[in-house]
Image (cartoon, rainbow, N blue to C red; front, side, top):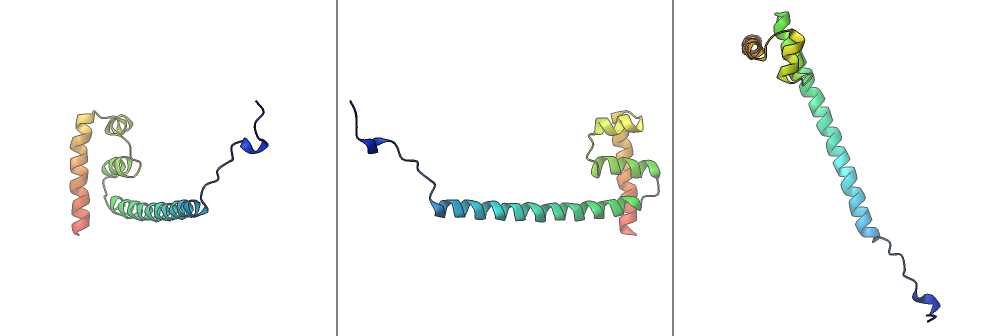
Length: 104
């Protein structure tokens, strides 16, 4: 019954080269994520600047809630005390106002 003393299983450690590749990939992905976050921040700032040009406060509020705060239509409607259907109408009007300010 007694086996040899060296029969216990050995722990297998990952191949150092594979580990190095995995770490490099993680670092590369982290860098890509950071670049994407910076791009998103830039785009949101540009959008904020365009929205601020809209003189109608309700239209500006609607656009901010939807496109900068990413709120669902139902929430925007509730916060502005309108029906969702009316919010769609106001949204179209707000976009028209935004287009007017972009072309000027």
